[in-house]
Image 1: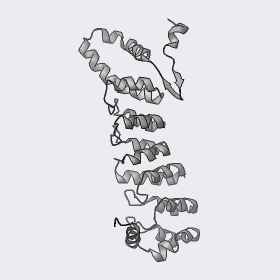
Image 2: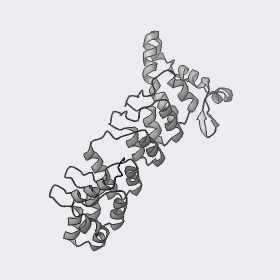
Image 3: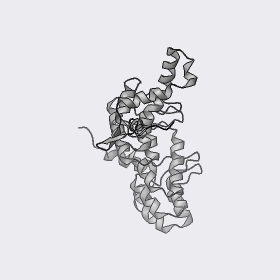
Image 4: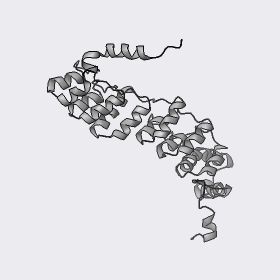
Length: 264
C-alpha cells in the first residue's frame, strides 16, 4: 500500500547546518521495518541479538547519509567501534565517504583510527584510496597508521605511477608513507617512473620524499636505470643531489639524520 504524504514525511530527512538529521521517528521506523514475518516466531532475546547485529550496518548507513541524529541514537546502544558483516565501522564509512564532520564527531566519541575491517583496511587507508586529504591530515594527528603489509603499499604506489594518479600519490605522501617502499622485487615507484621516461612523475615523487637510491633485486637503483638507458631529462632531475652529493642511500640517510634538530 502506498504511503500517504504525511506518513512519508516522517521518514524524510531535513537539513540543519548542512547535515542530514532525523528525530526519534526514524528509529521507530527502523523498528517497524524489523517487525517482519521471519522475526515473529523468535523470542525477545533472539530479536535483541539480531537487532544488535544489524545496528552497526544502520550506523554506517547513517554516516553515509550524513544522518547525525540517527547516528547519535544508534551509538547510545552500540560501541562506536562496532563493525558490520565486513567489519566496517562508522569511522571506516566516514573516511570512505569523505564525511569530514562525521570523522571529527566519531573521533571525539572515541572511535579508534587503528581498527581494521575484514579486508585489513584501516580508516586511513580508505581516506587515501578515496583522496580525502583533510581527513588524512586529521587521522594523522590522531596517530593513525596503515595495517597493510609494506609490499602491498609498494604495489599500490607503483599502480598509481602506471595510472598517472597524482592525486592518490599525494594522499600517500600526506599519510606519512615511505614513498620508497618497494614491491616483491623491491622495485619502487621511482624505478617505474624512470622506466616510463616520465620526468613529471619523477619530479613529483622527488617532491614527495622519494629517492632514486633504493636497489631492486638486481641491485639497480633508479639512477642506474636512467644512466643505462640514457634518460638525460630524468638524470637532470637527480643531478647533483643523488649522483654526486649522495650517491648511496646510506650517505643520504646519514645526511637527513643530521638535519633532525636535537632536543638540546
